[in-house]
Amino acid sequence: MARIDDFFKAMAKYQATEFHLASDAEPQFKIANALQPVSKQQFTRQEVLGLISEILPQDRKEQLMSHGVTEFSYSLAGAGGFRGRVTMEGAAASAVFHPDADPAPSAAAAADAPPATAAAPAAAAAPGSGKEPEINKYLRLLVERKGSDLHFSSGERPIIRVDGDIRKLEEFPVTTPAAAERILGEIIDKRHRREFDEISDTDFAHEIAGLARFRVNIFADRKGMGGVFRVIPSRTVTVDDLGVSPYIQNLCNLNKGLVLVTGPTGSGKSTTLCALIDLINRTRTAHIITLEDPIEFVHENKKCLINQREVGSHTQSFKNALRAALREDPNIVLVGEMRDLETISIAIETSETGHLVFATLHTSTAPSTVDRIIEQFPADRQEQIRIMLSESLKGVISQTLCKKIGGGRIAAMEVLLGLPSVSNLIRESKTYQLPSVIQTNKKIGMISLNDALMEYVNKKLVEPKEAYMKSVDKTDLLAQLKRDGHSTAFIDEVR
Image (cartoon, rainbow, N blue to C red; front, side, top):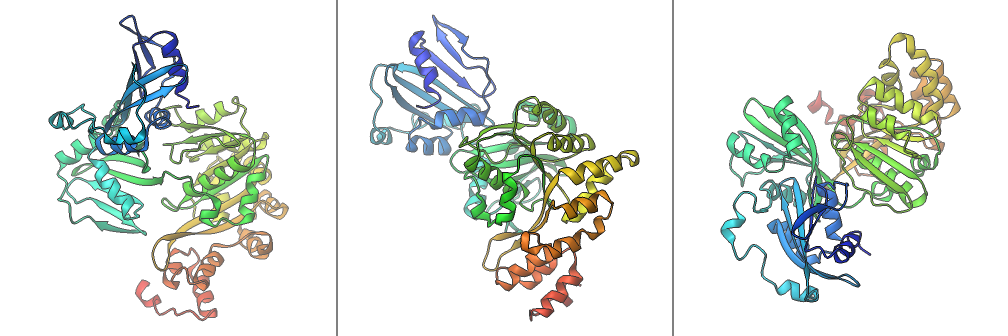
């Protein structure tokens, strides 16, 4: 049974003549010519589209994506038939349903029906008509060309990033400041527009149903408004897709502790966390709370109950949401980013009180991650945090993305596991010895970044030059390349 069916049953029961479902608004029935709220819950745009997609025929989904509006019929045993009109407009989505005396047509009959916009093409182009946002044509091209980011800036042609390199879309003209304001303005809702007007940038998610979600940052620079769109695949990424080692997968079986995924911006941290959460969702029965800004990968409940909360939309801040999570009976908490001292402190405390916490940091190596966390705290608290971290830290995965030979990218991962020897070094303030511990524990899953890079080079997945450029300890990697007989002729180019 579709989740929306309960509304249709209630609609029939109360003899409502209309059912209004819109993002950021309470669902309403029209009864006796008056609209009345039927639930206090307000659905997001994503949730509205999710409810409707369960009953929308495939051809109508395609029409909704291409035209921004579609109409269809739906029958429910015991409640009758209904006619619906669905509209996507910028960052909003809405639907209106009426009782229908005629039975719902088959998918084939629906396919023969004329497009909902065919009768009034002029109205389709007018503001408020439900026309698809113009930015979507660039985003479709981004996905088609297997890019990761779209840069849409005033005074420049649209630019996409493919396999780490930026490429101008020469087939499009230079975007004027007025055009950038108009095109980007189509997808900003009121709350994010207000935030942009106040601080000149804002973050949110944008979705093209059936294609992908996008993490969006809108900003102002000296030339005007600009935006960057990061692709978030619509399909949940798995540990098998990423080739995550069994040792990292074992971290998902823990009942408590802190697991950190670190790396520079754009290194695939969110994708790795998505795969780990998906593994838990498929293999454990647990309550998972994710705290994100914005929500990126969307997880449907499998064996687990998953509540995904977005900073700004569902909670004021990471620290507030993390504090509240302790009262929401979670087994696992994902913190999208540990941005400040208080969030870090609560995350560590949460991991000590019988919860498994996953979080991210912008550090380049596993050993430096430990130092970065401790150094965030005032000197008089560092000893206490060092002891807490030594007991709670169960794993650090530091990763960087490398260009693959033949196209695409692959993540090289440095892995530090929370063995007793690691805990002792953290407690005794001897983190400078952690690289040696990683080297001597390869058999149980630890690996240094350079060793991970060399594995890819030796398997002919990554060029020696690319591995050298992504290495933190370049001197050591160069020695390993020479030892294994790889050409280092590129070294004069990069020095």
